[in-house]
Amino acid sequence: MPLRNYGVLAGRVVDSRSEGGSDSPHFQVQVQGGETAFRVAINVLSQQSPSELLYLADEAFTHPMLDGVLRLPDGFTPLPGQPGSGALDFIRGNLFDRTAMRRMPATAPGPDNDLADALDHFVSRARNDPEARLFAFGERWGPEAGKADKVFGFTPGNGVHDVHMNQGNSAQFRKDDGVWQDGGLLLHFPGAGQTVAVFLAFQSQAWHTDDSTGHALTEVSDGDHRVRIVAALVNGPGPAPERETVTLLNTLAVDLDLDGWALLDSADHRMPLAGTALGAGEAARIRLTAPVQLGNSGGLLTLLDPAGLKVDGVAYTRDQARDDGLTTVF
Image (cartoon, rainbow, N blue to C red; front, side):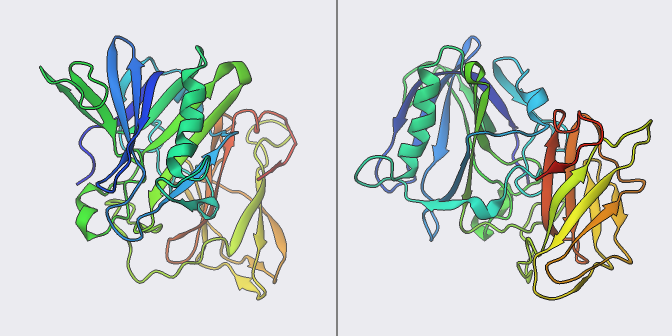
């Protein structure tokens, strides 16, 4: 079953602490969410081998979901597990390129060479910036009446955990699988006009999952990025409905017939690519037709192969869709 109390905590960073040891260590962050104190417990080591987590920090994060999330009040906001709610999904939300994630040890001697150091870099910056806000996506626990927090001592105990990918789990944690319920960390610095996004996943998790349950799909070959979405004309010139196009690039050394492939928009509308062929290393500009639409307020575009598996996906913001006739390059 999916997480029972998924959502996002917004607030100010008050304190942080790195736990050592090998018994499920976490990087702990104290956050003041309005009138309530919270602890954000961030895994830095997996209980399963290989133990190192996959880590990605995007220091110039842009995505259409930010429009709503950055306006949320301080405190914990429950989020429905569905697209457009502000919820995260590492696979379906086109938040980042998973091949950019790298393995990070939980702790290691020396500066700036482990996951605890990487997290501390961004969290300490937020703590020292009076305008900065932290947004932690995951599952809430508490409030624990009459019980002090075990790390920072505030009362009652209260917090957010599962701040990592929450689908495609191995058998031991399969019960936590779900779609549109992944964890993550956003740190917004208004003075710099910057949002930093931190994404974490376990190496044991699968990157192709069932669209309903989030369970790992078995016997799936990894065909990511065989074809790339490299550009899109989101807001073409002229009156509505504007001409919209997407440019696809075949990265392989062989020709590809895209019969059975499809493009998927933010509303899960599909446009089949029957009759489309891409020569080896070639690109093609494809006219989008109903029901697929690229909304001018930002959105998603995903490429699926004949098995319905994601091959590539992009997100574009309201600003990227604003200029008539300009093609957005991803």
